[in-house]
Image (tube, rainbow, N blue to C red; front, side, top):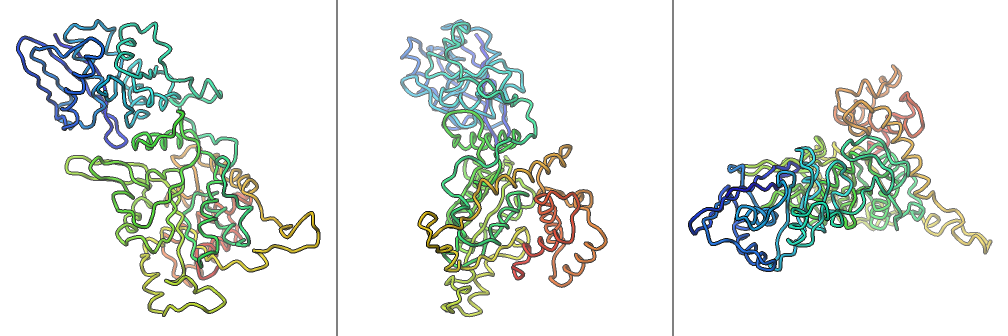
Length: 534
């Protein structure tokens, strides 16, 4: 007797349907074909032990299991549940409803319980696109698909609950994943994502707030522009000047992800097995801060399983590289392609994985090896050759891809202590810097302007404007163009640098609420672009 059960596996961001064909006939043997790896082949032992817990067994007959398509290598243990159901159906031990309606996944423990799987969210979306009526997943993984409408998502704790769903579908609503977010909050369906922005500025409550940043008005403004337009930024300054703290404050002024961004980032975290508990799509923008000892595969993705790296985990969020010059040269150089194309490609012998990598790069480094070059005390002991060697660790092409360059000076004593007053009520910190909430409101307003401007485009922030569309979206007058020509010649700015200046100018104009990019906006952009002019 032949049975067919459906499951799936992820290959990068792509999902492939796998048909588990099980044939049980006379004879005594067990064959599994279709390019299974060792983990898949070992499922026979897990399945056999788990079935005994429920009074079933692997029949002592000739069993042939084919994982189609046969030319795609299958890896992992998420096929266990589908294979177990296929064996029971083909051997006549269960009489299930139409199995073709379900996509079934889950790793079986020896006691029959189900362990969570990676990639549940993209698999549910794929099942919906392919016309399946329901997905049966481990309970811990089913919550990832709770916002996907148009398909039933069941969460099962063990093999017994899977069989209950298949044999008694009308009585198993209690096993469905929790209420969808659309039912809880009234949000629109994920199956038809829009590009609208969430109305609430800021990405939730953060322990890091710009109200706690003393001084650094220039750096604060540069980070506000970076947040408003999605620009890359590097901060160069002495230790203790606030570079790391300001970078960690950046998420507090970023708007929540829109529906498209949320869905894309959530899929990446689902694939990586790092989906936040509780279900529902991610709303807060990710903030990733890998150590300088990170390897190339860990940064861009790859390894044996082709898993996404830090640049993809930071997708639609922030990738913070502290002590930028301490990262290995090969590690830094691989950033050039994702910074330009906003994707990363991981190639293997027979497979190519493509992951989104649209992130804001925020880098921080010292001005010299000892870090005291900018101190007024003159305590720097570095020679000019040592400084050149240290700064030379960052290649020119990589620096050219970073939009905003900030020289972060040591904080003066009066900014650290504050405006001292005799008023006991006010205390020594009477003059409090602007809070993240106040800055976030301006960032949100600028992002809304961009969302409306690019409503018919495939991009939605200024940093993503293609070079071919600069003339359309970054219009300037004769005066402004004349000024730009002089700046390009004087500062030896590249064509890429020119494009970056125009994009920064567009963002500054948006923060001011101006449609036209004026000379004032361009001059400010040049100041943030050229570090020697800070």
